[in-house]
Length: 199
Image 1 (tube, rainbow, N blue to C red):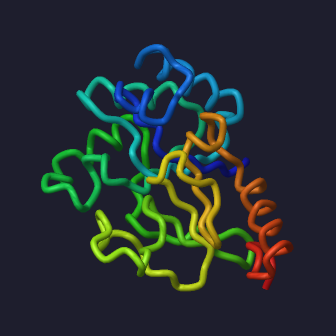
Image 2 (image 1 turned 60 degrees about the vertical axis):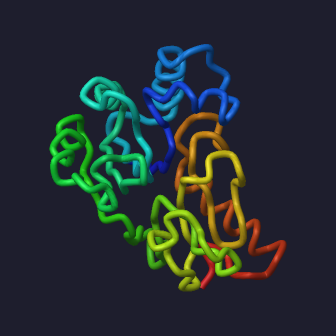
């Protein structure tokens, strides 16, 4: 079993194609492309943590795409997921996400790998330099741990101890935890700020 992470698939969202310069002509092509790339790397026995913003539009239809995806799927909801705690009717939507195969996790949770852990959340760490950060109360405070997140689309792949697992910076497919660990340790080697595997 291999553990993968991803975020910001935005199934059913036409405007995301232009917004993130995705290489698809329309929503159907995007959905088929994302499913193909997901299933190219994820096997049925693998585990995938989706860090939010799965789908938009008519959710009873667009969420059905999730049934085509390999692996045991866990969702850390993001601001565009109607089951997200910040959504006024989150409880009404929870069953729909579970019905397509997601196990729902808290909006901030810990991922353990061996003796190490990382914080997992849809949002990056709160930026103290930004006075009115959108969804500011939902961004975690930097507690010194590595953070695996989404939300920023193609703005960055890694910034300090934050690694964006969104599809827009990982060739439109989930990324393996092993690759994220190497990326974190590469930064530690270049900046000396503590790699993901180091004590």
